[in-house]
Length: 246
Image (cartoon, rainbow, N blue to C red; front, side):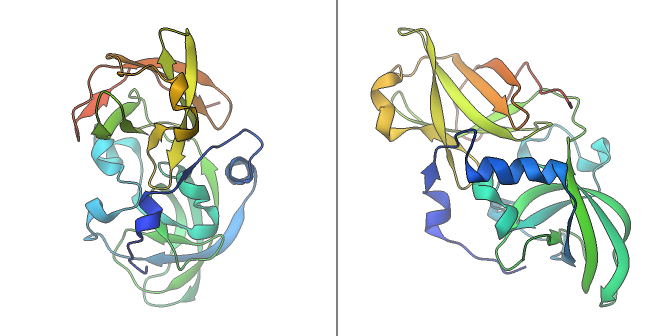
């Protein structure tokens, strides 16, 4: 996998309305099978350099959940970081070129982006060689624990927060405004975090009040409300909710 760093990847953000192209692409991952190539980029890759930065938010080892490997998804189906934390069921036919064929079925957890991969391609964080024919579909992650939260930045006026350990991708996040009694939508960043939308800053309650009341929406439209107890940078906070697998 081509390893790269783009400043724009970590600064651009956008709204994700229900009818957006990104939302449609994400839904299709659960509805269809996609065909492409499976490749390897090794197990020693620095987790801190992964686009999604999610592995530190898991309460246990991947093997505890029956997950075979982390993986990088192709840029076409990365959908602006919506697939960060998605689980894919990948099947390898053993056909292709190289020394280590991908055969059988694997459950992988997406933590990174493969910018050189084409639609349908999956790059495994495993040691191996070759390019192998695969197909995949998205499935709910087998997590029994509650969701988790991590702040990259926070102040009384600004937060950048990530949601992890979710069975299904989060397509919407909102902050509660105690004064107006409403949940105000946040913006998704291209590295898998959520920030306050600059175009509606006047709708957020600032200084920000803690514990932080949040609302999460999954790709299936399920809505959960939760409370984040702190805001220390890098600390993983465990929530009290989890999406269903339906």
